[in-house]
Image (cartoon, rainbow, N blue to C red; front, top):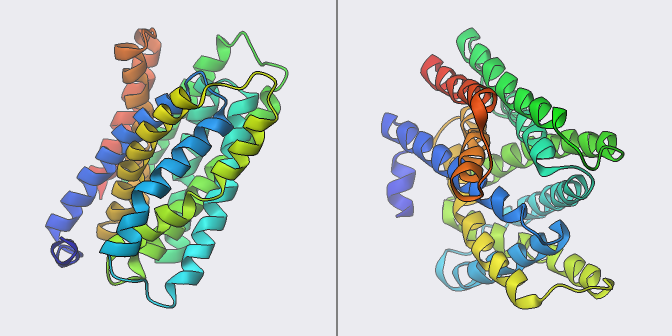
Length: 300
């Protein structure tokens, strides 16, 4: 499969597959966000998810894919550091602010910084039409955050800190998107990068989560937490794996922008499965996100 995937690099078929992978990643990222939105502490959920996908990736890393080239170990170390900081910032933001406000801010700042990073690192450029699409998409995402903020009734005292952390988390989203794109392009076999990345990346947050769990007065049950972790781990493997493969086959900036349609899918999931009300205003804002993504893709 890796030979077939590599053969598509730089071809129209590869570009189309990258588009499909980015949309697939957006749908799964919305599912992942809904899992994190659940009743458990975000630090505990993150630890359960990480240990789950580390265990899933371990046999592939150790027994299936080719061994990483020597230069890849420094790249894995860099990816681990960036993702670890991202996870800490994300958990801190979710602990201080409402998910419906924090999540759109993170997802809105991420693609903007990623497009800039793709220009600086890979020399990718957006034309005027694509920048217009980015602007429309960001108006929809930040508009959604502002709309949710208007009706926020809890955690207003910690909101400034939550929003600051959300912007910082968005910066780290851009950092890991561009760095992961560099990493998956630096190895001969992209699945070597994916297997080892998930194996290494999942080893720190379970330790943090365990220490936090032990310090709680009312400890949540392990079984329901790990069930959520296993489901989230599987979704994370597919979601992050898809976007990484998309950045190897296509443009990093376009993939980053298309992934942020996850905000639309997250709202649809909330409406269909969680009983949340969408309403005409939120529908209009979500339409802006989708239209912006279409403009970016068609403009390229």
